[in-house]
Length: 506
Image (cartoon, rainbow, N blue to C red; front, side):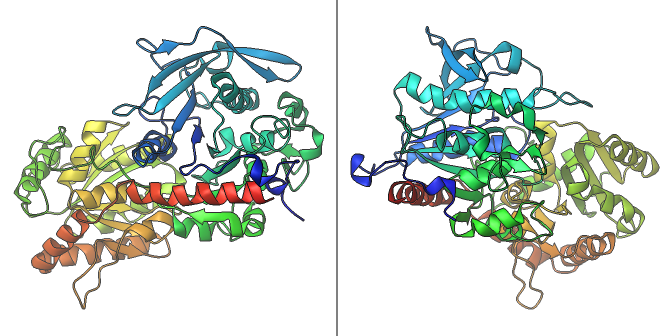
């Protein structure tokens, strides 16, 4: 059976010339620095700028959440009508640009749906109308194109909140001006799959024909991500390794069969990082700057970090840094399970994170039990995050799964060698230490257990204390590894072209 993304709907390739550089609309629920809860926001805030630097006409659409300040933005005079069920949602459109660029950003304002102090769900609760909210965003993204007279070659959507866009393009927009527009769906984290009551489907206006197993239906409920995976022209994940993992029952979160079927259209592209923000040579958060040629400033940063988190001022004791959302995925429970044995290695722990209240309590208890050895800051603080990356000697990421991960790349930029579970983007971005050749940029372990975490940290501490010249060479190797967005933008350019070929051929 041909998937829905490949139907011609009466379109012929000669009807529209292929752009030398495909124009792209990013439709997303997050975009740093305006609204962010994780890596999705970082990607949407950075990748369009890298694409624009390559010459693409790229634009971004985002909800205007209640916490986004629109002062100084242009408000379009005419309202935007968005079909939603049997009625229309009338929205205001604000326009600005992504910071430091000329990439247009459009904010969709509808107070009843978006003017809230959170992105998805309130703390400790859930939003009963999330299907309506993000259906509105998906439909508004396409209505906006017609409103602006901007008919993109590709709409690039991200995770479940905008995964309805490919379904809409294959149904309600099948014969309109957007009929030839291709879609690319990026999976940032397959684990996030909200399900909604089937009765809500009429809000989307896509018709009940798509409520099937090769579509939106998932055990009797609506699964927008599943529908997007079936309907999008091309699929990407945020690292090559994760593209392989999601096709397995162990890592496919119940959708591995869909991703195996769509395997020929699935590409893993490693995320980049903003090397201007994460640069030890110019980081404004640091008490001293440094680079790969001169690491003396890192010693100053280490002492400052010890002061910040109440750690003993011991320059010859290695600091292991952790910055994480405190959740089962991140494996912080594994660190706590071997904490006594870890501290027996004569190291210090510097932890920044928030999330599961039980894990927060355990970390605070550990800091109280081991004063001067364990420093914990609950919450998220940008300044402290940069100072941990710069001041720590090692950075621990024991994630059970990690589609891409960013901190292991930040750490390498700062000469803080990562210790990671060899999964997803962690495996793709860290070169394991080779004791025979003395090469590598970090230390890997597998599987993720308390014992393997302990063994990997022990291995790193041994190299740190017994082979300082090798450690310094590893630091320099890590700090000069390129992690910017240039290569990712080049790969996405290829994927956009493939998407257009598929859309137009079929």
